[in-house]
Length: 141
Image (tube, rainbow, N blue to C red; front, side):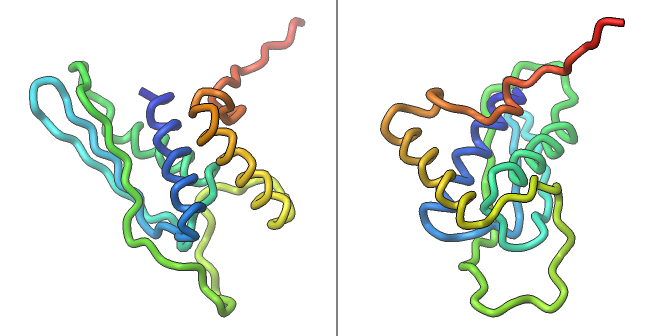
């Protein structure tokens, strides 16, 4: 389930970047095989199109609603309250949801554009975020 939520968050981030939009809310819906639907939503903290922030929010939302031991039929992730980037600076910006590593905005935008082109040309499974495959390291003592 977590891999599906991460994939959906990555696709949402790519779509938001392609359209130069940001999401103010993120909603996750889960349909169980017995027909019960569970939903959760969260504020993103403003104009968000960053993949790492959307991944963190999607994981948090999934943790809130994935509690039943019933087979899951579908999982939806939707970005809501879309907005264009602000052209004027914000006096008091909202608190960020997750602290991404310090990267220059131009380099990050260029890298994400390259990743979007690779995904569109060769498929979503060609490259994925390192956090999807990362496992905790155990040191030998």
